[in-house]
Image 1: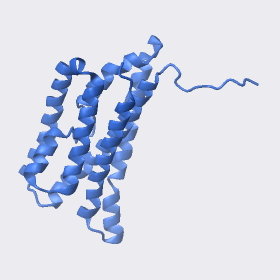
Image 2: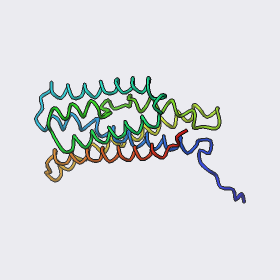
Image 3: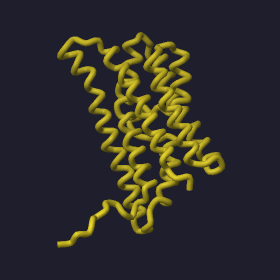
Image 4: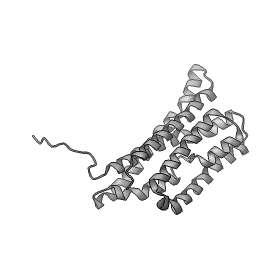
Amino acid sequence: MDSRVIIPFKWLSRDGKLLLAARTLRTFAYGFLSVVLAIYLKLVGFNDLSIGIILSATLINSVFFTLIASFYADRIGRRKVLIVYSALMSTSGLVFFVTSNYVALIISAFIGTINVTGTETGAFLSIEQAMLPQTINDPKKRNTVYALYNMAGTFAMSAGVLLSALPHVFVQQYGWNQIEFIKPLFALYSIIGLGVLGIYFLISKS
């Protein structure tokens, strides 16, 4: 009997596995937020134009921070930029949780790396995809690591979308207030942002 221990993905470094974990957590959060954000804004009383402006701010944010990453990530350090972005992610979730002030929400949507498109298109994606090839010790596995990266994101986002149905279920079954049940999801988003930040701190400086 072979007593050797089989190490899964031994061709992938610890940093690569950490990036996959960060991707999974982050896209899970994007999944439920992409569904509940517009619903929540409508429930608290904003009109369609006001909601559209907030959602547009999240898309502008995606373009803006991707450009910053493209020009400065290698100068500042990719790991440092990812840490800053995850801190902003956490902060934005906290703002949405504690206030419904329109100006605060617009600012939070603009700086908070919130993704409401149902797919990840932001700055995290571009930086992590640039880092992934450095985390494998077998060049033949380059396509495999990208496949794992995308698969992890797709399944995690699907789970997040499924979670977003819970407020509606509790409202229908128990008559709970939908606003008060959606708000904790923003707190969860903020906590996940902190979790992603912690993962980036574990990534080696190299």
